[in-house]
Length: 191
Image (cartoon, rainbow, N blue to C red; front, top):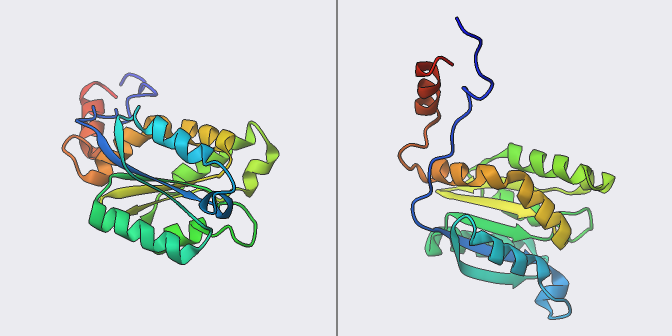
């Protein structure tokens, strides 16, 4: 038996059909009060187009977990989006409660996203281990909670960017996104 190719057991991300419906939520007392510019939310909204995605809802809320939870439920359940990108409220300050609000709406966690984002951040600053990025699934939507600082948002999203299209297709239950089929192709190719 020939040695297995290292990539033979990896799933190829299927081609995205159309544009993903995306929502961007900035969680910041200062931005919500109009005291600071929402640089991270603006950057995320622009970057979403490269998925390809279309931002259909965007908001800025104060660091109030109940408001964040209500907005997330409404955005996923009523508006219907494939991806929610949250920025802010993932630190250790007393009011940083975005991860808790995100988890309250979750059907299940996707821990690899947070792990990858923190690992990438540590390459730039040891303080990245203090950030509490999370990813969860609610229904057929993926929700990512990213840091609030623009540079940290860029680094975090870059760490998971290549996995996003495949993750979105899996969460949506689209044909061709199942892992067993991709693994079978690998075996047929000698993997």
